[in-house]
Length: 519
Image (cartoon, rainbow, N blue to C red; front, side):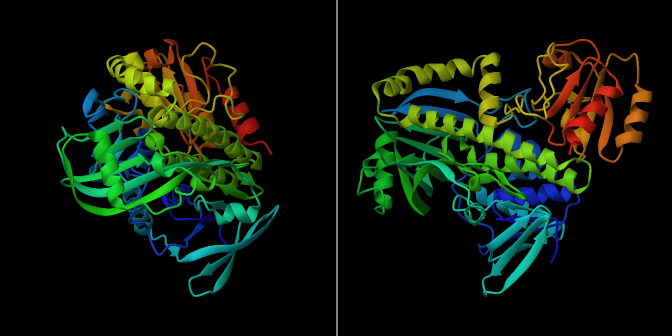
C-alpha cells in the first residue's frame, strides 16, 4: 500500500496531525496499538493556543462546550486561603479564548477522532509499527495487527506520535536525553464533597509537597493531582500506593472539610524530564511525548504535542505539493526542539517552586508567591506577561531560519511571533485566516487598495497564498507600534515570516522563492 504520510500513534498528537493533514488534502495512514481512544487521562487542560488551532478545523467551540472554563485560582497553606484570584478572562484582548479550559485528554481524543470519522478517515486500531527502513525517497513501514498479520506501507514521510516509550524513536536509534527523577506523582478522578466558589482550581502546598484540585464537568466531580515525597526514597518509589494514602495526603494539605465519596480511578507515576536528541531523521519525525516529556506543571504536555504537529503539518504538505523545498522540513527540528528545551527548564523550575524543600523555595512559596499572584492579576502589563507564557500564545520562532528580520526593527512585533489577536468588524482576525495557505496582510491607512500587488501575488502564488487589506485600527497601531502602512507575511501556522514598512511584491517573492522554495 502507498500513502504520503504514516502517523504512528492516535493520541491527541497523532489525531491532531491527521486533522491538519486533512486541511491540506494530504493522504495518510494512522495507526495505534490501543483498542481505541482512551477513557482515562492524565492531561487535563487545553490552553488558548490549542483552541486557536482547533478553531481552524471547527472544533474550538465544541471543546469549550464540553469543558469547564476555570474561573479562579486559590492558593492554600495550612488550611488558609493565601490568595484568591479571578482568572476567568485573564487573557482578554490577547486571544479569542482568554481563559484556561479544563478539557481532559479523553475528551480531546473523542473530539478529534469524531472529526476524522466525519471525514470518513479511519484509524487502524490494535496495529503497531514493527519495523521501518528509509532512503532518500521515502519510508517503508511494516505494521502489525493484533492478529499478527503484517502489511508494508510505502510513504514519503513517517511521524512518530507514539508516546514516551515510542517504538518509532527506538527503531530510529535516537537517544532520549534527560533524567528520571525519584519524584512520585498521583492523579485521581473522584466524586468529592468540597465547598468551592465556582469552577476554581485549588493549589494547597506543604513543606515539600502539593495537591491540586481541579473541578471537572459534572456535579461533585474533581481531579486530584499531587506528589508523594515520602515515597520518593530508594526502595519505596516503585511500591503500589493505596488510595487511602492519597486521600490522607490531600486532606493533610487542604485542611478543609472534604469527603471523597467515590474514587473513579487513580494512578501513580514517576516524573521524567527528557527530550530526543533530534526530532527528525531523514524522512521520519517525532512529535509529542515521543519527542519530549516533562513534569505536569502548567498543563503543557498535551498542548505542546498538538503545537508540534501544527508546526510540522504545513511543512510536510507544502513539500508534498511542490510549493516548498525539502529544506523547509529541517526547520521543524530547529523550531520545536528549541521550544522543548525551554519548556523542560520552565516546568522543572515551576515544580521546584511548588514542591522544593530548600529554605528559599519554601520562602518563595509561602511569602512571595501569594502576593506576587495578586499583583500579576491586577495589572494589565502583568497579565500580558503571564497569560502568553501559560497559554503558549507567546511561543515564538524569532531566532529560527524562517524568520526574516530585515524590516521589523521599528515594530513591537517581530518575525517569528504568532500573529497577534485583534478584532476586525467585530470578529476575530483569525476568522480571515482559516485557509490552509500563507497569508499576506497589508495594513492600510485607506489611501490604496493595493490592486496591482494583489493581482501580482494571485498570479504568482494564488494557489497557496491569500491577500487581504486590513485597516490600521487603533488596536493594530497599539499592538504593532506603527501608524504607517505595512505588510505582514504569515506562514500557514500563523507565525510571522516577515513584516516590513515597504509594501511591494519584491520582498514577498524573495521570501517565498528564496526561503520557502529553497532546495
